[in-house]
Length: 611
Image 1: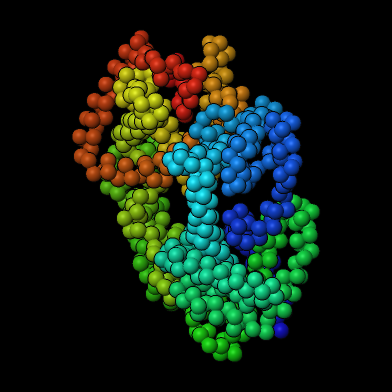
Image 2: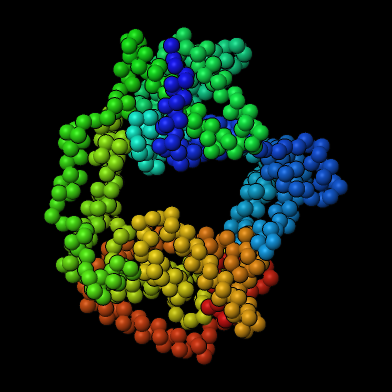
């Protein structure tokens, strides 16, 4: 007999150890519709078609709470394009009017705003429908094609996103059952064992069987519990054949369906509380708590099946989900990591004192690459690898190398793309020009795509936008000490860029009585001085520069003869200085640079450079 009380007590202990990961796992399951969908349904407000039409007719607009993009989709599926357009316009109007004090939630301008408007208002669906209609030259044909496309998209998302996540997030909980640490990278477990498509198909076939049994009403309820364990079985052995997984679940649940129903029913109080709290209690506690309990139930049924020698039970062969490997096994399998641990090169031994040590420790910059720096890089690479496996070596995380199916590990070529590196002064200068050129190319390309003309962006005349180069260099230098904490680094990047941009705008307006940039109408803008779109790009760009782009470029710069690199940098600095002096008297101005038409969108441009 399954002991519910003991299982729930253990579930609480497990949840406490993995709280953040488990909460996120269940929340994602609810968002994409894999499980716990009642969480979001608790806070969802719907209205009838009559109410929507009445609001549109009387007010010409409506609140987001009264109409959603779902109504746009349903109208298009019915072939009622006019009604869909009215609904979309009503949503867009409401979105653009929302404000909280000085903070505007309006979505009238900008790339991010356009995306939010298109998706949130259902405008993207209307665009697709109208495109199909213009090509087919028939409204009825367009409706039919749109229905087919919608069905294909829905089926693809269901099979390859929703279904696979049903397996992936249960793998997270299974590993948390016996181990104290679960890495977020384990969400990609199915990709690492190359069983992503197989898992998707297995869940799809199981769902199809359930759907067919649902037609018999009573049979649907019974088979729901017969196939209850399929996601857990695949999470343990993603290589198992589809019909074997279904059959094994059916045999393991034989005689336990009513028991499983009572286990689900025991959480009815939490479901009621979730409805009362509009899903808050479910998100932050009851959903992961339930899943921890169900994992305990699966483990108990698995052991019972082994005791009863159920046919094909040996297919559940991931024994190290339920017991920890010995230290000797880990030492043998991870001997390469142990060798690094006992290497003579240690990070602490590579640090310097004095001025050099100060700049290395606080800004990550050195005067030149030498043998000491080579030692430091080796030590960093070793530390990165040790940190990747440290929880496994301590027997606190699942040892992937003991999994019956070989898992893909980190590409060896990426091991030297470490972000805790030092940059030489000349490497920083080179990166400044590279980032400046990338920024210039990006904005020039946007104008070519948008307006069909070449525009030399920026106040200077050369092929560079210094704001991008300065931003990249400053992030690499002044946020060096935060590199070990990516989340803090991203927040710091947003904060620093936001504060600098906001107060620069304020001071310029105060002293010059002129606005060099204005984000009014952009999504989440603050007094028109900063906006979510700019800060989001700063965060993404800063993250890419520190953790990927910067290290990759620096690896290639180190291959260049350093004397040659120095000469190139000096020549570029001289040309840049001449450009700056000349542009101070004869700034680069004109259409698309300082002269924007009313219909021209401002796209992530620092207008302070176009003064």
